[in-house]
Amino acid sequence: MITLKAQAPRLVHLVEDADSAHATETVPAGPPRLHLKNATVDFGNRQWPAVENASLAIGAGEFVALLGPSGCGKSTLLNVFAGFQAPTSGDVLLDGEPLRGPSAKCGVVFQKHSLFPWRSVLENVAFGPRRLGLPNPLGIARDLLDTVGLRDVASAWPSSLSGGMQQRVGIARALATRPPVLLMDEPFGALDAQTRALMQEELLSIWDRLRPTVVFVTHDIEEAIFLADRVVVMQTRPGRIAREFDVPFARPRATGVMDEPAFIELRREISEIIRAEARKSFR
Ligand code: ADP
Ligand code: MG
Image (cartoon, rainbow, N blue to C red):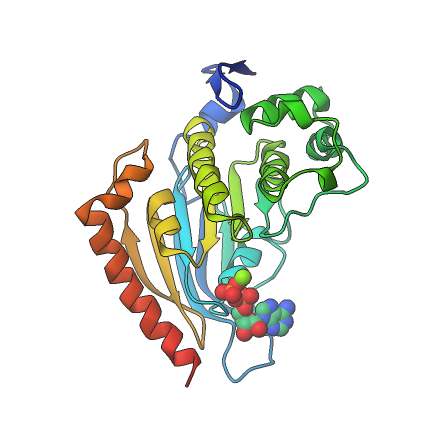
């Protein structure tokens, strides 16, 4: 069970019982949680595959950012991890087992929220737990709305919320089945800069408490470095994994980390790779 204690309007503290399912999930042991082996995805519509020969092992509880210019295959790769897209060749494993389609172990958040417009915010979040037959789906949904600071709008329609709030509902919905893996495709891409900064901090605080394995797609270098343990930089034509960077900053992270010389240097190094890649698209 999770206990949520609201302290300030949007500040919520979550305490987990030591024997909860999630507490055992966060122990990084055994095979990688997600394992991509020489995966190629070819839609057959270009001279080059969307993703070519990509290999990536992601540990339990790790936060990985997939970064690269538009069209380099980030979404395609995320769809492979989500089981929405089978690789043309190569393998994708979840907890050591070949992935054969979407798994209940993975929660997915898209760039644009994909809420049911005809269900209330609460019912949107309760949908997954209901479908899985979990006990007390409304209780789970209420707890998560607390976690993302949306308790007050539980009975509202999604269309009445701001973009940032809708995206928070999307995150709550993805978390509602307690998936050990969270796959996020530019989830904050449509938000204004301030809301985006708040959402990044909120995501880090949720991740810190629940420790899911996260694959976070973005084309924003600062966002990738600020959030992730590891930044995987992709290149385009064909989409390939170009470089990986371990992010050396301690957690919990505050936005001040972006002013540190090491952050600025890492941003510069990654920026050069991305810029060289982006130039290729104009040739
Ligand atoms: P990114 O998310 O990095 O912007 P995508 O993964 O969406 O890139 O796309 C990579 C390449 O694959 C692009 O050239 C895109 O046009 C192509 N692509 C993506 N999805 C499909 C699809 N379902 N059918 C055909 N081509 C696709
Ligand atoms: Mg994309």
